[in-house]
Figure 1 (tube, rainbow, N blue to C red):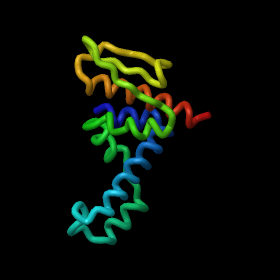
Figure 2: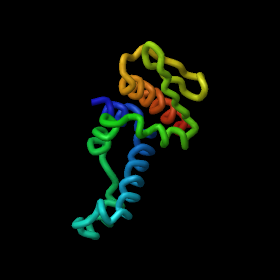
Figure 3: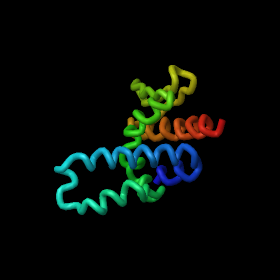
Figure 4: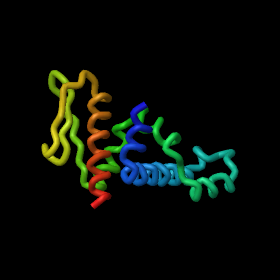
Length: 124
């Protein structure tokens, strides 16, 4: 499980990412097909409770590339490159790494690097 490790290692980035996931969940509350049968008081309390690292980590593990949009808005632009292996670049080549045999492994590596960059940016 890489998500929990990233959230704990980069706490400032983790707070931004948790807030982003909460916002996405709140946006989904506006879809009656997704919230049918869920009491309104539960939905309202969720908005103020937030989420824990343990609740967000599985979402990162399942789909790390879902965070690319969040990183875009924080000016950390990830590009996954495909050749004989998968690689990534961040911010038009300021960070480049590669050699993974699957896209998901490259996505994880890029997200890990982006966590570090975002955390550094937030510490300044």
